[in-house]
Length: 344
Image (cartoon, rainbow, N blue to C red; front, side, top):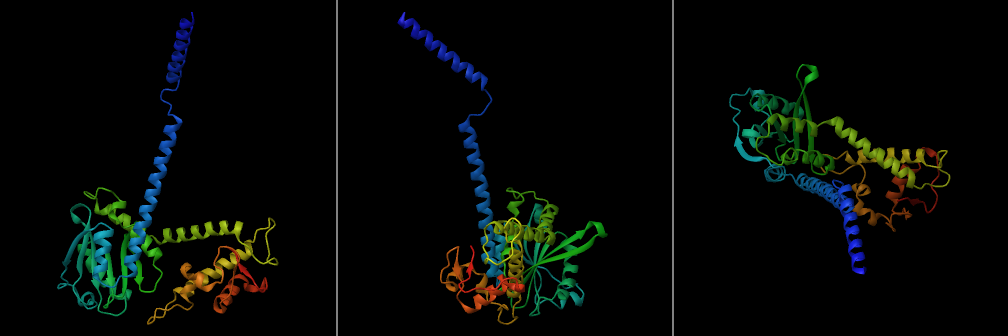
């Protein structure tokens, strides 16, 4: 009887398991869902890491771009274009297009099906990268290179322009010329981000059979000024709304009805942006800005402050204190007090 009862209980238990399996058939287990989520998270992290690494590699090249060796690393290695390095004869060009050149243009790299998308390098004879000198050269090159990126440098290769030509469909095929400028001492983070978008592997992992028109459209998007501007203001807005919850100002600074320092924060932000543009205004010989670069270099903050911790860092160096007082206490809405602190 006892044995029969155990057998009966065993059968009932097995029947329940079978019924449960039938009921949940097709429904993923929690462990499977968690595993899938982990796989998705890992894939997203890898993509983000890959993008950051590519942008950093491009930035390193641009910061040291002083010869064709850097250009080779950029297009042949980082951005996955095919090597060409073939001279293009301007013998039949009009004088107005030949005279600005220090040497023959070079078909530097190619991409896409049959190598139909071209990267063309032109070295100007001038010490400056004047747009008026580039225009007649581009007009000639477009006749034989309709899908292309044009790279210009001055004579000593200390300044560079990466030039994209887009046709405006809305205005009878009008040409829209956009440039990414690269020069020693300039802020190049945005330039690196946009140039990294030109990587052919971001269009397709399989580089064979890529349409030159598709590559051209990808370049057009990377050089889209409206997109760059939109991204810039989105980043500013995101930082503002975050800082509105965390920033600290002197007690007599005005606040909103909910106690948030919106007005002081906006004043601080606009002055920071203004100082950034002053920093970007460079002396043509020394490349020095109108205000020191160190004010915007996070690696140097510890040298400027006695306590570089995220909160309550005393303002000590005179030049730094003066600038930040103008930034934080502009327009006379609050008086700087002894021992004022910079919120994290």
